[in-house]
Image (cartoon, rainbow, N blue to C red):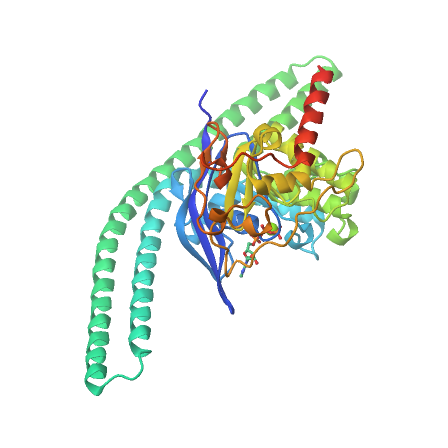
Length: 498
Ligand SMILES: Nc1ncnc2c1ncn2[C@@H]1O[C@H](COP(=O)(O)OP(=O)(O)OP(=O)(O)O)[C@@H](O)[C@H]1O
Ligand SMILES: [Mg+2]
Protein backbone atom coordinates (compact mmCIF):
# COMPACT_ATOMS: atom_id res chain seq x y z
CA UNK A 1 0.00 0.00 0.00
CA UNK A 2 1.38 3.42 -0.94
CA UNK A 3 1.79 5.61 2.09
CA UNK A 4 0.11 8.99 2.05
CA UNK A 5 2.61 11.85 2.09
CA UNK A 6 1.31 14.56 4.37
CA UNK A 7 4.20 17.03 4.52
CA UNK A 8 7.18 17.41 2.25
CA UNK A 9 10.28 19.53 2.86
CA UNK A 10 12.38 20.05 -0.25
CA UNK A 11 15.91 21.51 -0.53
CA UNK A 12 15.37 23.88 2.37
CA UNK A 13 18.17 26.43 2.86
CA UNK A 14 18.01 28.87 5.79
CA UNK A 15 20.63 31.44 6.80
CA UNK A 16 20.76 33.94 9.64
CA UNK A 17 22.20 37.43 9.54
CA UNK A 18 24.48 37.84 12.56
CA UNK A 19 26.99 40.48 13.64
CA UNK A 20 29.79 38.10 12.72
CA UNK A 21 28.51 37.18 9.28
CA UNK A 22 25.99 34.93 7.61
CA UNK A 23 25.28 31.77 9.63
CA UNK A 24 24.26 28.77 7.52
CA UNK A 25 21.79 26.95 9.78
CA UNK A 26 19.95 24.66 7.35
CA UNK A 27 21.80 23.54 4.25
CA UNK A 28 19.63 21.82 1.70
CA UNK A 29 17.38 19.67 3.86
CA UNK A 30 14.73 17.42 2.32
CA UNK A 31 12.39 14.91 3.96
CA UNK A 32 8.83 13.62 3.76
CA UNK A 33 6.38 12.93 6.56
CA UNK A 34 3.83 10.17 5.98
CA UNK A 35 0.38 9.90 7.52
CA UNK A 36 0.36 8.25 10.92
CA UNK A 37 4.12 7.91 11.29
CA UNK A 38 6.66 9.39 13.68
CA UNK A 39 9.78 10.79 12.08
CA UNK A 40 12.57 11.44 14.57
CA UNK A 41 15.10 14.14 13.73
CA UNK A 42 18.26 13.48 15.72
CA UNK A 43 21.44 15.50 16.05
CA UNK A 44 23.65 17.42 18.44
CA UNK A 45 22.98 20.95 19.61
CA UNK A 46 23.14 23.46 16.75
CA UNK A 47 22.57 20.97 13.94
CA UNK A 48 19.49 22.86 12.70
CA UNK A 49 16.65 20.77 14.14
CA UNK A 50 14.71 23.63 15.73
CA UNK A 51 15.25 25.98 12.82
CA UNK A 52 13.78 23.35 10.48
CA UNK A 53 10.70 22.87 12.66
CA UNK A 54 10.25 26.60 13.14
CA UNK A 55 10.27 27.03 9.37
CA UNK A 56 7.41 24.54 9.16
CA UNK A 57 5.52 26.47 11.84
CA UNK A 58 6.26 29.83 10.20
CA UNK A 59 7.88 31.23 13.32
CA UNK A 60 11.46 31.83 12.19
CA UNK A 61 13.32 34.71 13.85
CA UNK A 62 13.39 38.06 12.06
CA UNK A 63 17.04 37.79 11.08
CA UNK A 64 16.43 34.59 9.12
CA UNK A 65 16.73 34.40 5.36
CA UNK A 66 15.04 31.53 3.59
CA UNK A 67 17.45 31.14 0.69
CA UNK A 68 15.63 28.36 -1.08
CA UNK A 69 13.44 25.32 -1.05
CA UNK A 70 9.82 24.73 -0.19
CA UNK A 71 7.62 23.11 2.44
CA UNK A 72 4.60 21.54 0.81
CA UNK A 73 1.47 20.89 2.84
CA UNK A 74 -1.93 20.22 1.30
CA UNK A 75 -0.73 21.44 -2.09
CA UNK A 76 0.57 24.74 -0.74
CA UNK A 77 4.09 25.96 -0.12
CA UNK A 78 4.03 27.00 3.53
CA UNK A 79 6.95 29.34 2.86
CA UNK A 80 4.80 31.39 0.51
CA UNK A 81 1.50 31.39 2.35
CA UNK A 82 0.85 34.77 3.89
CA UNK A 83 1.14 35.05 7.64
CA UNK A 84 -2.60 35.23 8.25
CA UNK A 85 -3.22 31.99 6.35
CA UNK A 86 -0.28 30.40 8.06
CA UNK A 87 -1.89 31.00 11.42
CA UNK A 88 -5.06 29.43 10.22
CA UNK A 89 -3.34 26.36 8.88
CA UNK A 90 -1.04 25.84 11.78
CA UNK A 91 -3.71 26.69 14.32
CA UNK A 92 -5.87 23.94 12.96
CA UNK A 93 -3.59 21.39 11.45
CA UNK A 94 -0.03 21.66 12.72
CA UNK A 95 0.60 21.82 16.44
CA UNK A 96 3.93 22.23 18.18
CA UNK A 97 5.24 21.41 21.62
CA UNK A 98 8.45 23.05 22.77
CA UNK A 99 11.24 22.09 25.10
CA UNK A 100 10.24 24.59 27.75
CA UNK A 101 6.54 24.27 28.58
CA UNK A 102 6.50 27.48 30.64
CA UNK A 103 7.21 29.58 27.58
CA UNK A 104 4.01 28.38 25.89
CA UNK A 105 1.75 29.05 28.90
CA UNK A 106 0.51 32.37 30.18
CA UNK A 107 1.85 32.57 33.75
CA UNK A 108 -0.95 34.75 35.10
CA UNK A 109 -3.96 32.88 33.71
CA UNK A 110 -5.40 29.82 35.42
CA UNK A 111 -4.71 26.55 33.62
CA UNK A 112 -8.38 25.67 33.20
CA UNK A 113 -9.14 29.00 31.60
CA UNK A 114 -6.26 28.63 29.14
CA UNK A 115 -7.51 25.24 27.98
CA UNK A 116 -11.16 26.37 27.92
CA UNK A 117 -10.35 29.37 25.76
CA UNK A 118 -8.38 27.25 23.31
CA UNK A 119 -11.30 24.81 23.19
CA UNK A 120 -13.86 27.54 22.51
CA UNK A 121 -11.69 29.04 19.83
CA UNK A 122 -11.33 25.68 18.13
CA UNK A 123 -14.90 24.40 18.37
CA UNK A 124 -17.10 26.96 16.70
CA UNK A 125 -18.37 24.46 14.11
CA UNK A 126 -20.02 27.00 11.84
CA UNK A 127 -16.95 29.20 11.69
CA UNK A 128 -14.64 26.23 11.10
CA UNK A 129 -16.94 24.94 8.38
CA UNK A 130 -17.01 28.32 6.64
CA UNK A 131 -13.23 28.73 6.89
CA UNK A 132 -12.72 25.27 5.53
CA UNK A 133 -14.96 25.90 2.55
CA UNK A 134 -13.25 29.12 1.53
CA UNK A 135 -9.65 28.34 2.55
CA UNK A 136 -8.36 27.05 -0.81
CA UNK A 137 -9.54 30.07 -2.76
CA UNK A 138 -8.59 32.48 -0.01
CA UNK A 139 -5.05 31.12 0.05
CA UNK A 140 -4.76 31.41 -3.73
CA UNK A 141 -5.81 35.04 -3.57
CA UNK A 142 -3.62 35.94 -0.61
CA UNK A 143 -0.65 34.10 -2.06
CA UNK A 144 -0.82 36.10 -5.23
CA UNK A 145 -0.34 39.28 -3.24
CA UNK A 146 2.37 37.68 -1.09
CA UNK A 147 4.24 36.46 -4.16
CA UNK A 148 4.07 39.91 -5.71
CA UNK A 149 5.67 41.38 -2.61
CA UNK A 150 8.39 38.72 -2.64
CA UNK A 151 9.26 39.47 -6.27
CA UNK A 152 9.36 43.20 -5.67
CA UNK A 153 11.46 42.80 -2.53
CA UNK A 154 13.93 40.60 -4.39
CA UNK A 155 14.32 43.09 -7.18
CA UNK A 156 14.78 45.93 -4.67
CA UNK A 157 17.44 43.92 -2.88
CA UNK A 158 19.33 43.28 -6.10
CA UNK A 159 19.14 46.92 -7.12
CA UNK A 160 20.43 47.99 -3.73
CA UNK A 161 23.32 45.56 -3.85
CA UNK A 162 24.21 46.80 -7.31
CA UNK A 163 24.18 50.42 -6.17
CA UNK A 164 26.21 49.68 -3.07
CA UNK A 165 28.79 47.89 -5.17
CA UNK A 166 29.14 50.76 -7.60
CA UNK A 167 29.34 53.32 -4.82
CA UNK A 168 31.96 51.38 -2.91
CA UNK A 169 34.48 51.49 -5.75
CA UNK A 170 37.44 53.67 -4.85
CA UNK A 171 39.97 55.59 -6.86
CA UNK A 172 37.71 56.28 -9.81
CA UNK A 173 38.27 59.04 -12.34
CA UNK A 174 35.65 61.77 -12.63
CA UNK A 175 34.59 60.29 -15.91
CA UNK A 176 34.06 56.86 -14.35
CA UNK A 177 32.17 58.41 -11.45
CA UNK A 178 29.85 60.19 -13.85
CA UNK A 179 29.31 56.96 -15.73
CA UNK A 180 28.43 55.08 -12.51
CA UNK A 181 26.02 57.81 -11.54
CA UNK A 182 24.35 57.36 -14.88
CA UNK A 183 24.23 53.57 -14.41
CA UNK A 184 22.63 53.96 -10.99
CA UNK A 185 20.04 56.32 -12.36
CA UNK A 186 19.25 53.85 -15.09
CA UNK A 187 19.03 50.95 -12.62
CA UNK A 188 16.63 52.92 -10.42
CA UNK A 189 14.44 53.67 -13.41
CA UNK A 190 14.45 49.98 -14.31
CA UNK A 191 13.37 49.08 -10.79
CA UNK A 192 10.52 51.55 -10.95
CA UNK A 193 9.43 50.08 -14.25
CA UNK A 194 9.69 46.54 -12.87
CA UNK A 195 7.54 47.39 -9.85
CA UNK A 196 4.94 49.00 -12.05
CA UNK A 197 4.83 46.02 -14.42
CA UNK A 198 4.79 43.44 -11.63
CA UNK A 199 2.04 45.23 -9.76
CA UNK A 200 -0.08 45.49 -12.89
CA UNK A 201 0.45 41.82 -13.71
CA UNK A 202 -0.34 40.56 -10.23
CA UNK A 203 -3.23 42.92 -9.69
CA UNK A 204 -4.84 41.45 -12.78
CA UNK A 205 -4.26 37.90 -11.48
CA UNK A 206 -5.43 38.80 -8.00
CA UNK A 207 -8.58 40.34 -9.44
CA UNK A 208 -9.42 37.01 -11.07
CA UNK A 209 -8.84 35.11 -7.84
CA UNK A 210 -10.83 37.67 -5.89
CA UNK A 211 -13.85 37.13 -8.15
CA UNK A 212 -13.61 33.38 -7.65
CA UNK A 213 -13.23 33.92 -3.91
CA UNK A 214 -16.31 36.13 -3.72
CA UNK A 215 -18.40 33.44 -5.40
CA UNK A 216 -16.96 30.78 -3.08
CA UNK A 217 -17.72 32.94 -0.04
CA UNK A 218 -21.31 33.41 -1.09
CA UNK A 219 -21.62 29.71 -1.72
CA UNK A 220 -20.05 28.88 1.63
CA UNK A 221 -22.45 31.19 3.47
CA UNK A 222 -25.37 29.39 1.86
CA UNK A 223 -23.96 25.98 2.74
CA UNK A 224 -23.40 27.00 6.35
CA UNK A 225 -26.93 28.42 6.49
CA UNK A 226 -28.37 25.20 5.09
CA UNK A 227 -26.43 23.15 7.59
CA UNK A 228 -27.67 25.33 10.43
CA UNK A 229 -31.29 25.14 9.31
CA UNK A 230 -31.11 21.40 8.80
CA UNK A 231 -29.55 20.94 12.23
CA UNK A 232 -32.21 23.15 13.84
CA UNK A 233 -35.00 21.25 12.18
CA UNK A 234 -33.61 17.85 13.11
CA UNK A 235 -33.23 19.03 16.67
CA UNK A 236 -36.78 20.38 16.84
CA UNK A 237 -38.16 17.12 15.41
CA UNK A 238 -36.16 15.03 17.80
CA UNK A 239 -37.29 17.09 20.81
CA UNK A 240 -40.92 16.82 19.71
CA UNK A 241 -40.54 13.08 19.47
CA UNK A 242 -38.87 12.82 22.87
CA UNK A 243 -41.48 15.03 24.57
CA UNK A 244 -44.24 12.86 23.16
CA UNK A 245 -42.41 9.82 24.45
CA UNK A 246 -42.09 11.45 27.87
CA UNK A 247 -45.77 12.27 28.21
CA UNK A 248 -46.74 8.75 27.20
CA UNK A 249 -44.18 7.22 29.55
CA UNK A 250 -45.79 5.06 32.21
CA UNK A 251 -43.40 4.68 35.09
CA UNK A 252 -41.34 7.26 36.85
CA UNK A 253 -38.21 5.44 35.75
CA UNK A 254 -39.21 5.56 32.11
CA UNK A 255 -39.83 9.32 32.43
CA UNK A 256 -36.39 9.85 33.98
CA UNK A 257 -34.76 7.94 31.16
CA UNK A 258 -36.42 10.11 28.54
CA UNK A 259 -35.36 13.18 30.48
CA UNK A 260 -31.77 11.99 30.20
CA UNK A 261 -32.25 11.45 26.47
CA UNK A 262 -33.47 15.04 26.13
CA UNK A 263 -30.44 16.35 27.96
CA UNK A 264 -28.12 14.34 25.72
CA UNK A 265 -29.92 15.62 22.64
CA UNK A 266 -29.47 19.21 23.78
CA UNK A 267 -25.75 18.71 24.21
CA UNK A 268 -25.39 16.92 20.88
CA UNK A 269 -27.26 19.79 19.24
CA UNK A 270 -24.95 22.47 20.67
CA UNK A 271 -22.04 20.37 19.61
CA UNK A 272 -23.14 20.45 16.00
CA UNK A 273 -23.16 24.24 15.96
CA UNK A 274 -21.04 25.78 18.62
CA UNK A 275 -20.28 24.60 22.08
CA UNK A 276 -21.22 26.67 25.09
CA UNK A 277 -18.76 27.95 27.64
CA UNK A 278 -20.01 25.39 30.15
CA UNK A 279 -19.48 22.62 27.61
CA UNK A 280 -16.01 23.95 26.75
CA UNK A 281 -15.16 23.83 30.43
CA UNK A 282 -16.35 20.28 30.64
CA UNK A 283 -14.22 19.40 27.64
CA UNK A 284 -11.20 21.15 29.07
CA UNK A 285 -11.52 18.90 32.11
CA UNK A 286 -11.87 15.86 29.86
CA UNK A 287 -8.82 16.78 27.82
CA UNK A 288 -6.86 17.34 31.05
CA UNK A 289 -7.86 13.82 31.99
CA UNK A 290 -6.90 12.53 28.53
CA UNK A 291 -3.35 13.84 28.98
CA UNK A 292 -3.12 12.29 32.44
CA UNK A 293 -3.58 15.16 34.88
CA UNK A 294 -4.94 13.66 38.11
CA UNK A 295 -7.94 15.37 39.73
CA UNK A 296 -8.46 17.78 36.83
CA UNK A 297 -11.51 19.41 38.45
CA UNK A 298 -9.37 20.51 41.38
CA UNK A 299 -6.36 21.55 39.35
CA UNK A 300 -8.50 23.51 36.89
CA UNK A 301 -8.21 26.70 38.95
CA UNK A 302 -4.48 26.58 39.54
CA UNK A 303 -1.76 28.66 37.89
CA UNK A 304 1.11 27.26 35.78
CA UNK A 305 3.67 27.73 38.57
CA UNK A 306 1.67 25.37 40.78
CA UNK A 307 2.33 22.48 38.40
CA UNK A 308 5.46 20.34 38.08
CA UNK A 309 7.46 20.40 34.84
CA UNK A 310 5.96 17.13 33.65
CA UNK A 311 2.40 18.27 34.40
CA UNK A 312 3.02 21.56 32.61
CA UNK A 313 4.19 19.68 29.54
CA UNK A 314 0.96 17.66 29.69
CA UNK A 315 -1.02 20.92 29.74
CA UNK A 316 0.85 22.23 26.71
CA UNK A 317 -0.01 18.99 24.93
CA UNK A 318 -3.67 19.40 25.99
CA UNK A 319 -3.79 22.90 24.51
CA UNK A 320 -2.22 21.70 21.25
CA UNK A 321 -4.88 18.98 21.08
CA UNK A 322 -7.85 21.35 21.39
CA UNK A 323 -7.16 22.30 17.77
CA UNK A 324 -7.35 18.66 16.59
CA UNK A 325 -4.08 18.91 14.68
CA UNK A 326 -3.09 16.30 12.13
CA UNK A 327 0.62 16.96 12.51
CA UNK A 328 2.30 17.33 15.89
CA UNK A 329 5.86 18.66 16.07
CA UNK A 330 7.59 17.90 19.37
CA UNK A 331 10.87 19.77 19.79
CA UNK A 332 12.81 18.09 22.61
CA UNK A 333 9.66 17.96 24.73
CA UNK A 334 11.34 16.06 27.54
CA UNK A 335 14.80 17.60 27.74
CA UNK A 336 13.94 19.73 30.76
CA UNK A 337 12.43 16.78 32.66
CA UNK A 338 14.00 14.06 34.75
CA UNK A 339 14.24 10.55 33.44
CA UNK A 340 11.14 8.90 34.90
CA UNK A 341 8.93 11.84 33.96
CA UNK A 342 10.54 11.84 30.52
CA UNK A 343 9.41 8.26 29.95
CA UNK A 344 5.85 9.14 30.99
CA UNK A 345 5.62 12.05 28.57
CA UNK A 346 6.99 9.93 25.72
CA UNK A 347 4.41 7.28 26.50
CA UNK A 348 1.69 9.94 26.52
CA UNK A 349 2.77 11.29 23.13
CA UNK A 350 2.79 7.76 21.71
CA UNK A 351 -0.67 6.98 23.08
CA UNK A 352 -2.23 10.22 21.82
CA UNK A 353 -0.56 9.78 18.46
CA UNK A 354 -2.07 6.31 18.10
CA UNK A 355 -5.52 7.25 19.40
CA UNK A 356 -5.80 10.31 17.17
CA UNK A 357 -3.89 8.91 14.18
CA UNK A 358 -1.51 11.88 14.20
CA UNK A 359 1.64 12.27 12.15
CA UNK A 360 4.54 13.30 14.32
CA UNK A 361 7.92 14.96 13.94
CA UNK A 362 9.88 14.21 17.08
CA UNK A 363 13.08 16.17 17.62
CA UNK A 364 15.76 15.04 20.03
CA UNK A 365 19.52 15.03 20.55
CA UNK A 366 19.24 11.68 22.35
CA UNK A 367 19.20 8.61 20.08
CA UNK A 368 18.37 6.63 23.21
CA UNK A 369 14.71 7.72 23.22
CA UNK A 370 14.30 7.05 19.52
CA UNK A 371 13.62 3.27 19.51
CA UNK A 372 10.42 3.79 21.49
CA UNK A 373 9.18 6.60 19.29
CA UNK A 374 10.36 6.43 15.70
CA UNK A 375 9.13 4.75 12.57
CA UNK A 376 11.83 6.57 10.65
CA UNK A 377 14.89 8.56 11.63
CA UNK A 378 16.72 11.48 10.02
CA UNK A 379 20.19 12.16 11.42
CA UNK A 380 21.22 15.80 11.16
CA UNK A 381 24.68 17.28 11.36
CA UNK A 382 25.78 20.85 10.65
CA UNK A 383 22.55 21.79 8.89
CA UNK A 384 22.31 18.67 6.71
CA UNK A 385 20.61 15.32 6.91
CA UNK A 386 23.55 12.91 6.74
CA UNK A 387 21.62 9.66 7.05
CA UNK A 388 17.98 8.67 6.94
CA UNK A 389 16.25 5.32 7.25
CA UNK A 390 13.69 3.27 9.12
CA UNK A 391 14.38 3.02 12.85
CA UNK A 392 15.65 -0.54 12.32
CA UNK A 393 18.00 0.53 9.53
CA UNK A 394 19.49 3.29 11.64
CA UNK A 395 19.93 1.06 14.68
CA UNK A 396 20.98 -2.22 13.07
CA UNK A 397 22.68 -1.06 9.88
CA UNK A 398 24.01 2.48 10.43
CA UNK A 399 26.37 3.75 7.72
CA UNK A 400 27.49 7.31 8.48
CA UNK A 401 30.38 7.82 10.92
CA UNK A 402 28.31 10.50 12.64
CA UNK A 403 25.46 8.05 13.19
CA UNK A 404 28.04 5.60 14.59
CA UNK A 405 29.29 8.32 16.92
CA UNK A 406 25.76 9.09 18.12
CA UNK A 407 25.06 5.40 18.65
CA UNK A 408 28.32 5.01 20.61
CA UNK A 409 27.28 7.78 22.94
CA UNK A 410 23.89 6.33 23.96
CA UNK A 411 24.04 5.42 27.62
CA UNK A 412 23.84 1.67 28.10
CA UNK A 413 20.45 0.54 29.39
CA UNK A 414 22.05 -1.79 31.93
CA UNK A 415 24.96 0.26 33.22
CA UNK A 416 23.33 3.67 32.58
CA UNK A 417 26.81 4.84 31.69
CA UNK A 418 27.58 7.06 28.75
CA UNK A 419 29.84 4.91 26.65
CA UNK A 420 31.80 7.21 24.44
CA UNK A 421 31.38 10.95 24.12
CA UNK A 422 31.74 12.29 20.59
CA UNK A 423 35.17 13.97 20.41
CA UNK A 424 35.43 17.64 19.49
CA UNK A 425 32.58 20.11 19.04
CA UNK A 426 30.17 20.92 16.22
CA UNK A 427 31.51 23.49 13.72
CA UNK A 428 30.89 27.20 13.70
CA UNK A 429 28.20 27.50 11.06
CA UNK A 430 29.36 30.90 9.88
CA UNK A 431 32.29 28.95 8.42
CA UNK A 432 30.93 25.45 7.78
CA UNK A 433 33.71 22.99 6.92
CA UNK A 434 34.20 22.03 3.30
CA UNK A 435 33.45 18.47 2.27
CA UNK A 436 31.94 16.23 4.95
CA UNK A 437 31.35 18.59 7.88
CA UNK A 438 31.91 15.76 10.37
CA UNK A 439 35.38 14.88 8.98
CA UNK A 440 37.40 16.96 11.48
CA UNK A 441 35.88 14.92 14.34
CA UNK A 442 35.92 11.54 12.63
CA UNK A 443 38.66 8.95 12.75
CA UNK A 444 37.23 7.49 9.55
CA UNK A 445 37.82 10.66 7.54
CA UNK A 446 39.69 10.33 4.26
CA UNK A 447 41.42 13.07 2.30
CA UNK A 448 38.46 13.58 0.06
CA UNK A 449 36.22 14.21 3.09
CA UNK A 450 38.05 17.49 3.66
CA UNK A 451 37.71 18.60 0.07
CA UNK A 452 34.46 17.53 -1.45
CA UNK A 453 30.97 17.13 -0.16
CA UNK A 454 29.94 13.45 -0.26
CA UNK A 455 27.03 12.52 -2.54
CA UNK A 456 24.02 10.73 -1.09
CA UNK A 457 24.17 6.97 -1.55
CA UNK A 458 21.10 4.78 -1.65
CA UNK A 459 21.33 1.66 0.49
CA UNK A 460 17.68 0.55 0.28
CA UNK A 461 14.48 2.23 -0.89
CA UNK A 462 14.17 3.75 2.57
CA UNK A 463 17.81 4.08 3.64
CA UNK A 464 20.19 6.81 2.42
CA UNK A 465 23.51 8.11 3.70
CA UNK A 466 25.88 10.86 2.59
CA UNK A 467 29.40 9.60 3.26
CA UNK A 468 32.39 8.90 1.03
CA UNK A 469 32.73 5.55 2.82
CA UNK A 470 29.93 4.26 0.60
CA UNK A 471 31.82 5.10 -2.57
CA UNK A 472 32.97 1.88 -4.28
CA UNK A 473 36.56 3.21 -4.27
CA UNK A 474 36.60 3.69 -0.48
CA UNK A 475 38.48 1.20 1.70
CA UNK A 476 36.30 -1.20 3.68
CA UNK A 477 36.04 -0.06 7.28
CA UNK A 478 34.21 -1.53 10.26
CA UNK A 479 31.91 0.50 12.46
CA UNK A 480 33.13 1.05 16.05
CA UNK A 481 33.20 -2.17 18.09
CA UNK A 482 31.01 -0.60 20.74
CA UNK A 483 28.22 -0.20 18.16
CA UNK A 484 28.60 -3.55 16.39
CA UNK A 485 28.68 -5.43 19.69
CA UNK A 486 25.60 -3.74 20.93
CA UNK A 487 23.79 -4.53 17.68
CA UNK A 488 24.88 -8.17 17.98
CA UNK A 489 23.75 -8.31 21.58
CA UNK A 490 20.33 -6.82 20.91
CA UNK A 491 19.79 -9.10 17.90
CA UNK A 492 20.57 -12.09 20.12
CA UNK A 493 18.17 -10.81 22.76
CA UNK A 494 15.48 -10.42 20.13
CA UNK A 495 16.01 -14.01 19.05
CA UNK A 496 15.84 -15.39 22.58
CA UNK A 497 12.62 -13.40 23.08
CA UNK A 498 10.95 -15.34 20.31
N1 LIG B 1 17.88 33.79 15.32
C1 LIG B 1 19.09 33.26 15.09
N2 LIG B 1 20.14 34.04 14.77
C2 LIG B 1 21.35 33.52 14.51
N3 LIG B 1 21.63 32.21 14.55
C3 LIG B 1 20.63 31.37 14.88
C4 LIG B 1 19.31 31.84 15.17
N4 LIG B 1 18.52 30.77 15.46
C5 LIG B 1 19.33 29.69 15.36
N5 LIG B 1 20.58 30.04 15.01
C6 LIG B 1 21.72 29.13 14.75
O1 LIG B 1 21.30 28.15 13.83
C7 LIG B 1 21.96 26.92 14.10
C8 LIG B 1 20.90 25.83 14.24
O2 LIG B 1 20.13 26.09 15.42
P1 LIG B 1 18.95 25.15 15.93
O3 LIG B 1 18.27 25.90 17.01
O4 LIG B 1 18.16 24.66 14.81
O5 LIG B 1 19.77 23.96 16.56
P2 LIG B 1 19.17 22.62 17.20
O6 LIG B 1 19.60 21.49 16.32
O7 LIG B 1 17.74 22.78 17.47
O8 LIG B 1 20.01 22.53 18.54
P3 LIG B 1 19.54 22.30 20.08
O9 LIG B 1 19.69 20.83 20.31
O10 LIG B 1 20.56 23.09 20.84
O11 LIG B 1 18.15 22.81 20.24
C9 LIG B 1 22.78 27.15 15.34
O12 LIG B 1 24.10 27.40 14.96
C10 LIG B 1 22.15 28.37 15.97
O13 LIG B 1 23.08 29.08 16.72
MG1 LIG C 1 16.62 23.00 19.23
